[in-house]
Amino acid sequence: MRITQGLNQSQFLASLGTLESNLSQTQNQISSNLSFTTASQNPTAAGSVNNYNQALAQSQQFDTNANSAQTNLSTEDNALASVQTQLQSLRDLALQANTGGLSNTDLTSISTQAEQIQSGLLALANTQNGNGEYIFAGYAAQTQPFTASATGATYNGDQAQRQIQIAAGQTVADGDSGEAVFNQIKTGNGTFSVAAGAANTGSAIFGATSVADASAYDGKSFSINFTSPTAYTINDAANNVVTTGTYTSGQAISYDGTQVTLTGTPAANDTFTVAPSANQSVFTTVQNLIDALKGGSTSTAGQASLNNSIGSAINNIDQALNQTSDVRASIGGRLNSITTQLSVSGSQQVQLQTSISSLQGLDYAQAITTLDQQNTTLSAAMQAYTLTQGLSLFKFLQ
Picture 1: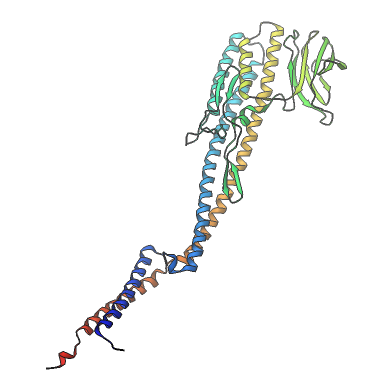
Picture 2: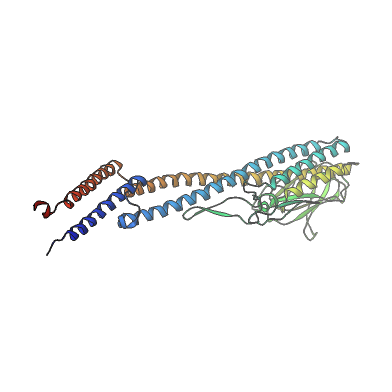
């Protein structure tokens, strides 16, 4: 094979291109601090790094979701803490109004304060998060959930809970609907409620109520009907007499596993109805209290009616306080789950990043040494080529 000058030049240029390519790759490694930047440079490691990066991106997205849910739940918890403060203030006002001896002017003043609390509760129920979404509207987050009405407030949201995925196979509700928090509150003692007849003319007032024997309680409605100030009958829902009894003020009347304590003097034909607890909006409870306070009392029977209305309101406020406490406990559990998951994902992300670094991380000192060697080799090659290009047989022929 004949070795020509052109062949030598071609071989040198090819070698020179390889040297420059290797030098460029090393420079890229140093600038990016990565041992490889394309899959072709290390196919096996690149496949593993790609899998690790996908897992890392998914974990980071879960963290974003978790942080968002955490913010919403914290906002809700703060709002409900304020709701409880407002309800406790309302309960104190109801107790004040229930002491007796207050003038109608005093009762009107208390009702004004109750109206202010109603407005405060309505504002809290329409709380928005940092994105302008209503936290108690369910999926209808852009719709104001509550608007004032003659009976308290109307709910405009839905009953859904938005589930946010915070880990593979794990979701958490990032809020609670206003329907569940403010409207689905049991009346009375949570099992049954007592209501005085609207036509009562005596001074009897119901007090403590309880389920004395859960095994005997069947959840059916009945009424206590006074035939005289000291005698009563128990009538079922069809108004059939099922038993009779003698009334003593302050002594509990027991029937069907329940106990109802009445005080005062009932009149003949006065009635008290016992019925299973039903759901009632906290806004309806407040409005009923306001209406009762504004109605005042002008007689013994009127005072008894007012006291019974206030007593019902106090029981219902207690149920609302219990409801908000239960919701806040649920929020606390969800926040704990998020905190735990964020801690777990943080550790997982460190492990993934360590694995990626072990595969793709650059040994900087070694890379600098390699770069120096490649520069030296390239420089030497260039010098050698320059010298060989100056050699010719004609230089030695004179």
